[in-house]
Length: 327
Image (cartoon, rainbow, N blue to C red; front, side, top):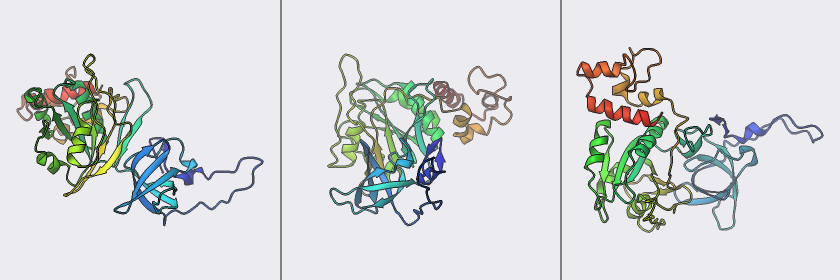
């Protein structure tokens, strides 16, 4: 099984034996009875996996899986000592097929995709209203990556005690993205309701308050909290690796990720972005071949839908702003 060029099954490594080596068996190992776990964090070549409801197992990766191929959120098959007792080590021998993969590139000219999280179904974009100031370009880019991955987006605006959320709310309401506004000591019941039953990955610029939210949502988890540089306005990276954390009742998962300062989208095509919006894609069937659907497009079905009163101009403008950020 492969995914975007990544080898995800070490059975693929059982190829023809090299010259001057002992012949290998033609029988490939069968891992159908191996225990299945979920990768909850990765640290220096060790993978912490949750097996069952409460057994955490430390594991190494089989050599045949290659350098990449296993990320937080993956469902994997484990062999060896899976007791989870201190000092034991299991081995990841196979990665199950992924439902979704959130990816990014270092910049728009980077040909190499970097998978961030597997099998999430919701993307929570965390943005501070001040300290550091919001960057709509970053929000748009993360939205594009989320839509491309098939994730349901959620916009969480923090630090509402420092600035008004009205401008950002007005900018993103036309996209029908759920928006939650928080401040220190806020009642997070609305956010808890949106996260319940989902596997939500938290993504955002450094210093926007992702770890503060996680600490409030999951008492006792004690994620490190960063400080924003007063000169540059940039946050300090405090989370060095992604980690999946189980939410209290009514349940769900939160995957906290390290802060990002860029979000390349060389792996995303405009067609995939349009396809994520069913109400918009319905109007693109009569577009000229190769239509870019942006402001420079001639004869675009989206403009015609606005003229006919079938689509609001405000929604189209919001969509095109996001589309431009992804190009």
